[in-house]
Image 1: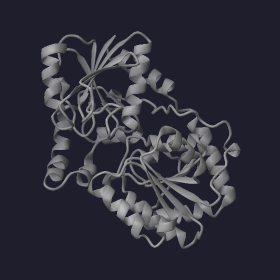
Image 2: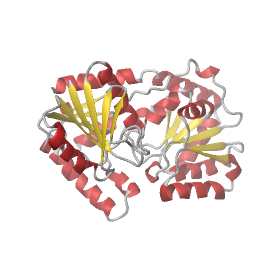
Image 3: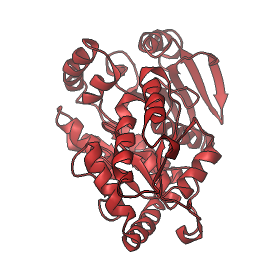
Image 4: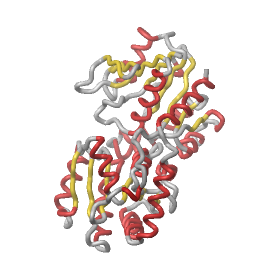
Length: 368
């Protein structure tokens, strides 16, 4: 097959995350098996306009905001009629391929934006985005959709998509699970991990506040924050870590390499994830694979990747006080902690990029 994939970020983008990792693991395997793949993505400073990567092609156009227009123009001028299947990936805003591509097309939706608008955009843009999202979803509700969780499926169905047209694939990790959690040496003192790009929708500030509350009960508790801290929210987080009454026990490492990320996942006792919502929460499964359970907010995506009380912990309420309570209860019960982290590790072993690709291939073959 020839596949043309519209999405606003590729894995080299400074803001790339779990969704881009899943996309390109799939693209790599499609190319490996003889399919031709072109990704039309947004450009960024330092990004080359045209790149070949592991058998597939990346064409970068415009930027985060203009890519939708430039991708439309590029398709019309250079790629109309080329593909057997077009993938319209919705990351906040869809490309609306339904209305102009000649070829058969489907959507790929990791998550809907909804309340994220109010965390990532200022008023009145956030309000406009929130209000028009249901409208354009209704316009696209006849499309077949690939998604990664039951939460996103239910979200889509609320806006008119039929259940039979929504196909869930697993989110595969490409990090190798450890051979046995008992063989991994944790930090000497209980240590929490905050990992990933520091943005307001990730609610990193909640994690710092929860750490401060929990530390009153667990005196030797530590917090490591790893991730790029850009923009005003990132500056706020760095300032908060310095001003905290427990500043000496908060370590900010900035962006880390894949090797450092894996080491932190192994050595920390729990990972905190407090996003407004996720498609799945790939970071949870990755941490589980390294023998570390997650304590997360009860939101879309995270309630899919965490089996509450079995492989991780969901909070009763999505606030720092509830998060702190869960931290205290988990870390002060050693037997329960060991049982839970072993179950999390076992659960993570059913998720890998090859399975994700096989799921995806089944969907697109059916869509032809």
